[in-house]
Length: 54
Image 1 (cartoon, rainbow, N blue to C red):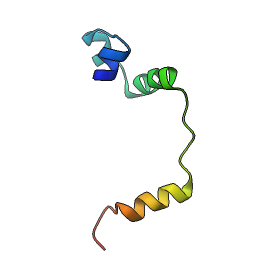
Image 2 (cartoon, helix red, strand yellow):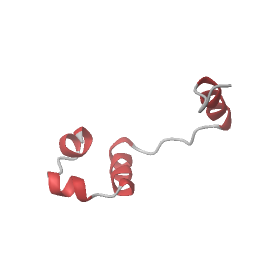
Image 3 (tube, one colour):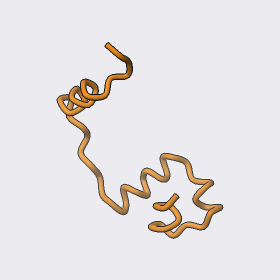
Image 4 (tube, helix red, strand yellow):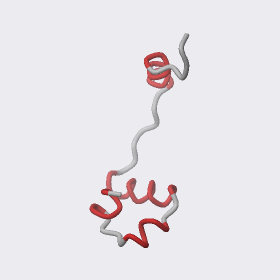
């Protein structure tokens, strides 16, 4: 909400009617595109934060 209302300066009606994809693209317009996560980084996250106990 802080991003939509504060950074993008959208009104509440406009913010709440956005789809997640539209909000993502708006953020991309402000902050630029980020590189995709590498497989090694994903594996490290999965190891550090498993979905269930081993």
